Amino acid sequence: MSQIKLTNVSLVRMKKGKKRFEIACYQNKVNDYQNGVEKDIDEVLQISQVFLNVSKGQVASTEDLKAAFNTTDIDAIIKEILKKGEIQLSEKERTLQNEKLHNEILSIISAKCINPKSKKRYPPTMIDKALKELKFNSANARSGKSKALEAIKLLVEKQVIPIARAKMRVKINMNNKEYKKIQEEFTTEFISNLESEENNGDEIEIVFLVEPENYKKLVDKVKNKNGKIELLDTAVIQEGEIKL
Image (cartoon, rainbow, N blue to C red):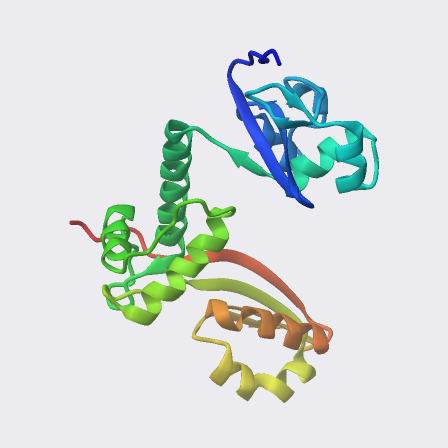
């Protein structure tokens, strides 16, 4: 069987039933399509066919497709493979992707965490050293944000460096009478640093810092009292960094 010569190709592979199916795509276009940036599937595909093996030119038969996908609609099958399949990268591509992901994770942690003693943020280089000491593996993660949150949890638990989540700044508007009913609870459970409080008689407006792990509970509490909450800053830090 003649081989199909494709250049600048990325494969997306998916196992369905007892067979493995592949489609040939342009590099960098798969992620754009999966993230909704690219809408035109023709811009993603090098060739509008489903293969058993792209490099050998083995096209999946109608019988194979029907048995695995319960349809012979090529477009529908390709979209399913794009959505659920795994991108097959070269070693160089995978290394570059992992480096980019790792740097993204370090940046997120740096933005969301502080040294609880100095109240200043750590540079990514110091966070990197701490994660290496913990043997944390960031490779092949699907989401930099979710992996960063996983890393933050580990760093806070192990404390190889003094580290804590930076607090969130919020503003709440609420009926004054309703607030007085829960003021003591707010003061002890949610408000870690009160920045301002304005009382016009009927309504009170307060701006304060809250621990990230308490934010969702705070939102539910405010809405339950028909109040309004606005997130002003997701990670409150002071100017400056801890230098190596």
